[in-house]
Image (cartoon, rainbow, N blue to C red):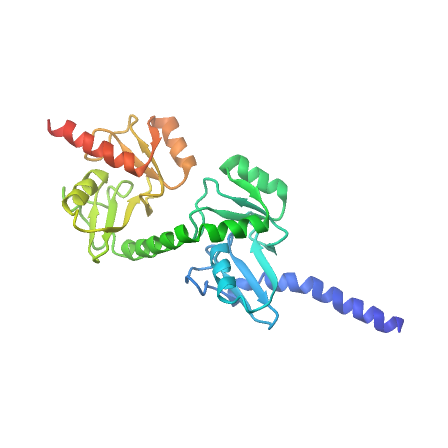
Length: 295
């Protein structure tokens, strides 16, 4: 009897060690999110893994898609739910994790970021640097479903951005209005994709404003701009803009630069001046500068 009990404890210990280790090998088994198709290796810091009582498992890119999966299969019994620790990318128990909602870091498939941390101290360090609110798993799930409408809109824009990016410099090597080489102005270039399938590539927000003013009969599906630091196309309406400062603008009096990360915008202002703004204000000031140029 004692021998049998020891064997049972040994087997139980084996599974308690191997199950978490097995969960860390989830990316080769679930390389892409089945709901949105995003690469889970690239989004390892936000990915999640769901285990059901029928021994099936599913890996998602984020809590957004995990929530969608749970809503789609509410008849199935969930046995394990893992989330990636933001810092280590190690899978941890999502229900026991310390979550941070919001902050300056762009979320994954969501308008309001949601990150998991194994240690509360690391979550607190994150909020000191990036902002956000420390929350429980119940809070973050509630927030995920409340944000779902905005997230649906965001996903549509990101898919459009992906398609538009593929035809950026290749299909639009020169600005449609001034003829400037867009590759040389990758840090300020813009790309508009309209809902009728057409797209316009420009060198700057100056020429983009002209295109939008000339095409009021068309609805922009997405408006992209080059990140000043990385030159990667980003959503012009959802990023941080810096207006003014000593750096001369492109086709304009005042500089208007876009940044995906607030810290990059702050670093730019420390060196060049200017002030934080929005896309709407940047557009308004662009038209004001046009008048100053021609008068």
